[in-house]
Each structure stands twice: as structure tokens, then as C-alpha cells.
Amino acid sequence: MRPSIPVLSDYGISPKHGFLPDVLPLTRLPDPYYNKWESIAANLQSLILSKRLRGVIDRLPVLSTIGLEHDAEWRRAYMLLTFFAHGYIWGGDTPCDRVPPSISVPLLDICKHLEIPPVSTYAASVLWNFKPLFLDEDIDDLDNIATLLTFTGSLDESWFYLVSVAIEARGGPIIPLMLTAIAAARQGDSATVTRCLRAFAERLDDLGELLRRMHESCDPGFFYRRIRTFLAGSKNMAEAGLPHGVMYDDGSGNSQYVQYSGPSNAQSSLIQFFDVVLGVEHRPTGEKPDPASESEREGRSIVPKHNFIRDMRRYMPGPHARFLNDVAAVANIREFVESRAATDRSLSIAYDACLAMLRAFRDIHIAIVTRYIILPSRESRARSRSPEVARTNLATASKNEKHKKVKGTGGTALIPFLKQARDETGEPSVETWARKFMSRQTKVSGQNDFFFGKDETSETLDEPIVEHGLAGTWTMDEDYGGICNY
Image (cartoon, rainbow, N blue to C red; front, side, top):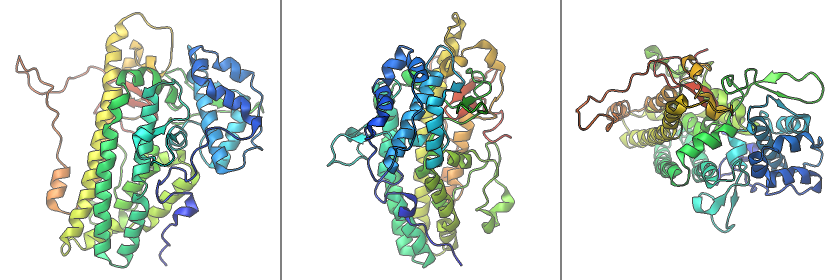
């Protein structure tokens, strides 16, 4: 018996706004018992700037979660405490590897309720961290949303989160649309599947345009030096000052060090839904497709054991991760299109258009990562010859000369991973021309010397560049390691 198609309401997913909450995030916890939390939130940027946040949190009493009733209250409490925890860890001259009981005790309880790790995630910084400016206007409009909490109080940080909020809202209707397509494929209704795929491709193009707006109000240098420091996780962060990870002290005396990844766009359930519903498979970085598996259609649903994108589901709210797993069990669009490739060209073209738009979306993301992390990192390394700064954290760790020779502390390669994820998006293409088009290698022009006629060759680095990304430690060496190189 075939599994039933998931019902969105069973997972708390909105047919209009997708993985964003159906009830708008609270701007304040209603119970006065939590006024101390709200007071810290209202002054978070000033407390971080004055380096007094740790002292305030150390004096904070351990509050119970008994006053949290509705889901919106649990979500706001999680958002507040993860911001406090990251501010506490990264808000001093050196990182602190212990989160005190005043934060740890309620946070661990809240995370158990929400089925999410005790670390800042995409859900905390994006999904549950926005409000509309005008209630009668939609939240997929970047000009109508604002953040509830930031570390820096800057427009740059707010904009960084809000672009993703708008993408989630604009992409929400794709979820019921493609569940309709799955149901239609079961009935052999090619016309409905084609219509859904065309609408999907058009909406994906809209999402790409939203992502392109990142540069409008988020400065790459400010993001690299100030914002990303507070978004860092505790996994593979030895060079940044957390060799063992972080201890969430629950006051029992038995707390252990743990390591978690920081927030990442790979934690977006919406983007992962696109892959799942289209049948896009991702392999560990550096691993080539198995030619034998191309002829074994039934083997395509097997997910590699070590897969970074799959691992990021651990950082999603529990119901969202379960939804993706249940959709994967019923996803049939790729097989349906392949079975009719010889007789229904309109269907094949619509499917390939979706893959092309998703691949283009990932191209935009690669350009943003390059502009906001790769290039500022190289500028930072160039300045590292100046006297060493006293402050040690994510933003300064890569400047240290001794870290130049560290190869893939986390076994990860940032740009190769993103490029492979993009290239894998085009692999299921049905039409020959589409497969050829999406497997092309993009040539980056403008890097040669106009006056001296140098060839367009990439600069060869003597040592691999180690970069501390939000979800762990990455190396920008194109040839070394992989994100799932276990």
C-alpha cells in the first residue's frame, strides 16, 4: 500500500507561507514572569557593545518554562535564549565555552519541546524572527517586514535575515502546489503535473530575484567582521577559541561539551523540499555520480549515509524534518517525467525548467557566499601582517598566521560543496539539450590583466585557506577534502 500524501496541517505548515508560522511570531512573551528575558532582549545590542551581557546573564535567575503555553510562546523563548547564548559565547574578547544555567536550563527544556538543538538555527534567526510593518500587506514583500531581534542592531543584520524570510514567504505556495503534482502523477494526470511544474519554475525565478537583493542593504565587510561572529556554531571551532565545543551547564555537575553547527541556509526546509520533490540527490563533496546507479531507477531514493544537507535536518524543527522525510517517501515527479519523456515533451520541458531555475538560484547563492565570505576572508588575510589583534573569535581566527597550514579542520570545502550542490541539481534533466546546458562549466571572466594580457588562470595558493563558516569550519582549497569527508 502506497503511503498517503502528507497533510500540511499535521506538521504545522502553512499553505500560504510554508514553513513560516501560521501565527505571527510574538513581539513579547505575554507572561510578566519572563520580563527579565524581555529586558535583556530590549538591550541586547547595548549589552554586547559594552561587554556587559555576560555579567547580566550570570546574575539572571533560572526561570521555569511552566509559563509557556502556546507554540508561539515556546518559539519566542527559543529565539530569545539562543540569541542570548550566542551573545554570551562570542560577545567578549575571547569566546566562552560554558553557557550558564540561567540560559542552559530553560533552553534545554524548550529545545526538547520544539525538537531542535540548543543552538541558534535558521529557525531562530529567520523563521521565528520577523514581524510585518503593515498587517494588511503580505510578508513576502521585503519592504513590509522587520526583525524582532539582532545582535548588532544594524540594518545590515536585519536585511540578512529578512531576505530569507521573504524567500520563505514567497516560496510557501510551492509546497501545496507540488503536493498536488504528486497526487496528479499518481493518477497519471500529465496536464496537471505540467501545469504545477510551470508554476513552480516561475515562482523559483521570483525567489532568485529576492536573493539578488541581498547586496542592497547588507555590506559584505560588515557581515564578515561583525555579524557572522555571533552566528557561529561550536562545531570544529578550535581555531576560533572553542577547542572542545560548548558546555550547556544545567547545574547538575554532569554537563558535557557538545558541538553544534551554526545556522545555515541548508537548514531551510523549503530549499530541501525543492530537492526532495524534484528528485535531486546530493552526494558527499567530491564524490562523483555512480554510472551504474543511473540505470537503476529504484536506487535513486537512497540517501548517502554521510550527507551534509541531510544532516542539516537535525537543526530543523522536528515537524518540519518529519515532513521532508514523509514527502521523500511519496515523491514521484522525477520518475513520472522520465516514464513519459518520449511521448510528452511539454512535461519534460516543464520539469527541466524547474531544475534550471533551481540551479540558477544556487548560482546566485554561490555569488553571495563569494562576496560575503570568500573575498572578505582574503582581504582579512592580507591585513594579517599587521600587529595581531587582542580579540579572538570567528572573525579574527583566520588572520592568525599559524592557522594557514590547517587543512580542513572540519573536512569541508565551502565553494566546492556549493558548486557540487548546484551541479547535482541539473543531473536529473530529461531533455538532452537541458542536460548539456546545465552541466556546462561557467567561465568567470574579468580576472585577467587587461593591460598585460595575462591568461585567465586562477591564482595558485601555496597553502589552503581555512575559513570558519556558520555551520562549521570550511577550507577554500578546491582540491582538498569534502564536506562529508569522514
